[in-house]
Length: 212
Image: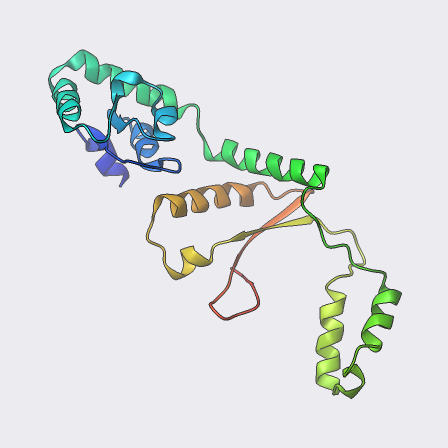
């Protein structure tokens, strides 16, 4: 894909709607001159009026293509715009923003976190639950292990899980899948004293996640 971007005479993206628009940004990162529909987030990514065209106007697109091929000055401007715009984006910066937003949510308490009860209260609650007295040794051991996961003898780092189930089961290299892979990779690089990042996945019908 990178080779195709780099060798393209012009990269044209006539999309009617995009949540973000990764392909034009990828093409610009490879130095390709980009013409793009003036739809949704695409205008923000391109940020160059002369490179934009109405997605439903084939006539204007035709003129833009001819200009980009025949007008060396216009083509140079498109390429310079590509190099200028890609400097505004990076996966590292995107990962930092994600962490920042989660920190804001955590500090504002707009999302709730599970706070385990005291071990004594938990034991009393479990022991009085219906059917517990009838459990065999194997099930009691499993129950004890499940309870122990909520208590640690040392302070653990906050865990940050990235669910890549779709990537594992059906990786079609779509835009959002490439975004997930790239940002997930940057998050893993940021594992430090505060966070422990890891990939997880699951299967249809399973009630558990598994480390990848």
